[in-house]
Amino acid sequence: MGMLFGKPKVSRITEHDRAILQMKQQRDTLKRYQQRVENLLEKERELAKKLLSENKREKAKLLLRKKKFQTEQLDRTEAALDTVEKLIQDLEYTLIETKVIEGLKAGNIALKKANELLNVEQIEQLLDETKEGIDKQREISDLLSGALSSEDEELVEAELNELISVEHQKVIDMLPTIPSEDLPSTVPENKEEKLPEKKIAIEA
Image (cartoon, rainbow, N blue to C red; front, side, top):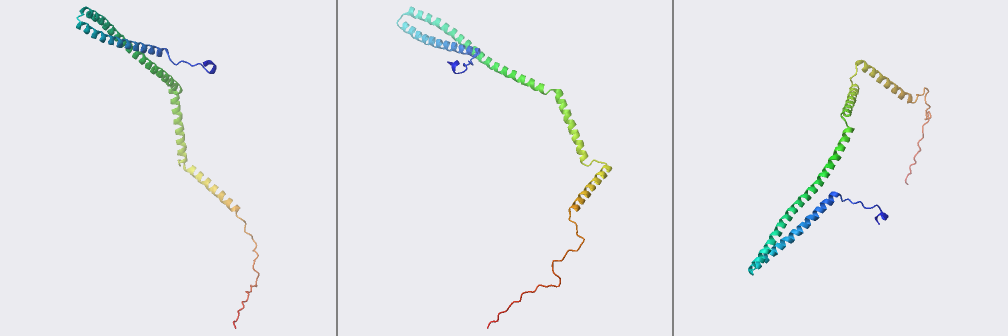
């Protein structure tokens, strides 16, 4: 069904994970067995007391022998449980160490690539080129800041005056020419405008 509707699911559980899971299952089995034996020992101890109260010494003694054997089994179970617990811890810690080692490997590979891109010779060459560029820029700045000889200053001043003269001449050429003849007057000679007379009304 999975192949019909898409890619089959890939299990992410590793052999390491399976080993830890199996050990935890064995630990749980040992714990259940330990609890069952402890309950049984308590019951047999109470039963031995009852048999002694009924003056059944041999039966009580036989029951205590059985209890002693089960106690030894319980001790072995406890030791096995401790061994399993330690093994689980070791396996889980090994998994953590594996991840740390993988991270270190990846970091080491990245560091090697970075070192290949920036080796010592390339860095020294880059610093030299940068120093040359800074020295050249400083030299240009010194020239532009006025570190010229007196002869150079005179040539610059002469060129500046020439540029000013050329620009001044351009402005003059743009101005209109002044006519040499007199302009005609717009007002007629010996003629004055007569003001209209005002009539004053005499009141009767």
